[in-house]
Image (cartoon, rainbow, N blue to C red):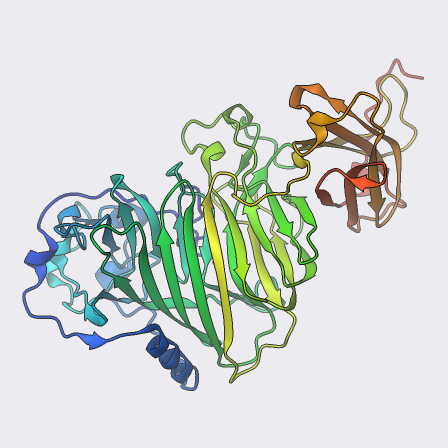
Length: 535
């Protein structure tokens, strides 16, 4: 689990502790000392409730917990274990179980959890008997009986020990495919990410967990979102499998004008990879949860944008109309490229967002933040609608989320499998000026079918500077093609240069489109590394 818990990092502090171990004790039934009060529930009611709440002043419940929980350190918080015999539905003939997270440390806003049975919402009452407090010095019996929870996680019948999904902190959640390996995260909503004022993190304040049918492979979760700027009603229909599929319906009600609203936001980590060696001091060749942003545009184009760990915050917006899909992917599934047998980056899930219905005009926006450490989530991607977001609106979005290895929806054309960068020039000749070498490998599609006389061309365009030493040649090791070129910056400036490349033959595209953004180094850093024997 590689996420930063520093309070100075608001993007990731809530994600590292979801692998808490569980112990065994009393059952959930034994904890219900008094009959619960049931109330009718429906998604229509939840939307109406969220709309009404948006018309009311925002009330924060942050910090409403005893001092004994507020001042826990990391080691103490890890001692708070949910007892597995207290799991919801443990004694029922269902394929799902739910376990709860205790409040404390960074999780200092109590949330409410309900169980849905035949259309009625029944509160899940907090009890210290649900938890083992270990060596934390927390006296569970002294805690308030209405304390509340920090979040929850679910297991599936194929493995009662490991989670398939978890919701913890703000509106963050994570899920796994058949690899059963956590990685990147999603959020319910992003508000003002990478603007000139602080980002806001809306929070899921209440959850309703549908009691699963005894033979059902799917389950449903409802959530109420609240923040100073917005409220929301969410429905998540969850089906584990090779890809865990989540069908999401979101109804969003702004309290105020929002400059940058992020729909279906994704959060990941990219520190070092084959194309970006800025933080190359670690012994491992690559360190990242995701290696690229994939786009399937409204006009049918497939785009691959490798991620970077820039020296300064970088923001890009890719305009589109009714996008067909986007996601942060971990395409590189080769252990040898990471050599990490502890966190298994090659098993980290990709996450693909598939809009249902028309989302209209807007842009997929990508934020890349500098990092010197892999415990900081420095990558964010989301859909930003073009229309202004103002109070009184009801914004409805539906989409499918696919969590797992490679997504089920990918370009039928050749796809980028590697991006390498280095110093340009010709081997054995003295360099007279600085250039950057780019190497892009493509595989799949019709490339393996091409004859030896096929005239494959790399179509390259750049926003600034010039390219030279261009080539596209077969790469038999992958039954694909390698495109290569040098980019010479136009001046001594460090302004970003945007690059676009794809393969074609006889005027027809053979591949998806590769996009890249390169920041030329400052003049003093443009070392030519000429060997002394070259003339």
